[in-house]
Image (tube, rainbow, N blue to C red; front, top):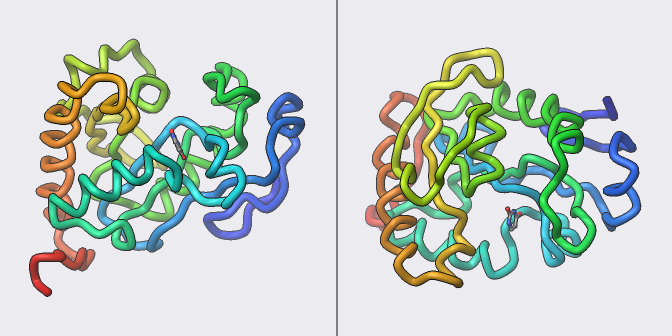
Length: 197
Ligand code: URA
């Protein structure tokens, strides 16, 4: 295990291939008391450059869809299964996912969200520890023990899926609508709805 400072991993050399390919460790972003925690796969090129998750094309799609549902990016927490960019954007290996798991568990425990939204196949299968057919299962909520508690995990397509298949837009839309509805259902939290302004 590397070093953590609160929610941030400050140093880690657990995965040799990722240490080689990364420019920096990309930690989660967003408030520590967010009601919704989005979990992506891992940093891409732009995330690796900027040091923030979902700031590339996928991030624009995520932000735009969130806004339509009355959620501001600034109100949600966004993180990834692995915090270092894999070479050529390949999927993280099982070993890399496991190496980073403790950081993700710690983040989930500290944020204590009302809902964890898995963005795509890799995070869905990692969080639920089973095979997931994301397109057909998107919008489904399943309980999983994460960050020391039983939590609701919402399966969602990856925002980038809409770039290759327009029919996925509706699927993303419906899943994020559900996430927005679940935000704040747990009581305390204080997500500001854009519609209030
Ligand atoms: N895709 C992801 O899964 N995570 C990011 O941070 C960016 C794109």
